[in-house]
Length: 130
Image (cartoon, rainbow, N blue to C red; front, top):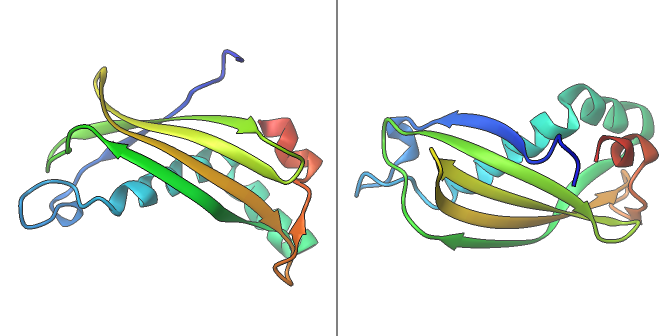
């Protein structure tokens, strides 16, 4: 594994992130994972791929394990480590920490598609970032 992994992105938890019990609503972790992948891959590159090549990424499969809930006021860190699983699919291990305490474990499998939603190989420009 490279020294650049895991990629780390902070997330501040706001009141709007929580449910009636005061704990972060489970689906919001998917949003945090999405933001972290966007930071990891680079927004400019993702925009360029869509605009110039008609390529984008979609979630193929997602697995999550919840160990402890985060609450309003927490500062979390999303730690992301990508691994190529095939020429068409990359898996991102994405874990949520509060300090050094693991709260949520996730694995998000992404595939690359063209504008017609046809599966295509992951572009070299993305592979280079991984």
